[in-house]
Length: 114
Length: 113
Image (cartoon, rainbow over all chains, first blue to last red; front, side, top):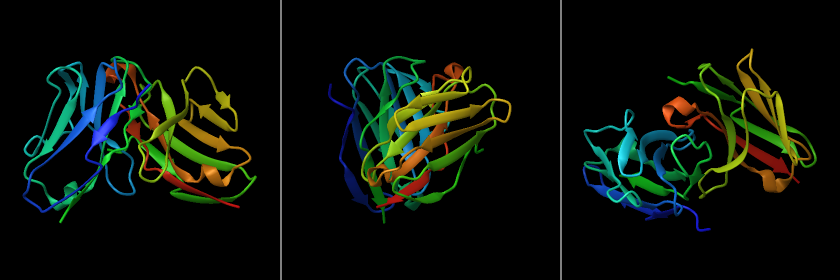
């Protein structure tokens, strides 16, 4: 069974530029999560999808962050414009269904904003 | 608001020793407590998890001890090996929130040969 795929693995941009990250969850997993992991901290949930609907985006900075999961499979997370404090690893995770506790994480995208 | 507090921040153990990492939570609605292991450049991987209806769960060299009244739980790694060197995160979740995970700050474990 293939794991959660993410790309790119690394990205360096200047502040005020835009960036997008892509995630492909485990096949058949209905629930998809995006987490932000700042260096030295635990991951923090940004947004949670169930199929193509948003379940929880309460911690997503909506003035600059957006995410979509149009066909209920792949997802993209966008930052526009980026700030220095957005430097972090962006992790995508998936689980079989809403309420399924086991989440499987991808390798993450390391973003550096200069 | 930090709902899960983890300690210590870093831990150095000799090979064969016992590694102990502690976590405390605030929200009594949490009903699932996993531990994740993360190696550099990798995403977190589920190691072991427990629900509040049991006080201990053991899987191989890894044991979770859970104290519901104290709102604390801990990870014990027996016979620690250099390959266990990684960052460990405790987390908590509740079904009513769609099982979103609230993570602790992490513990960087180093096992010396």
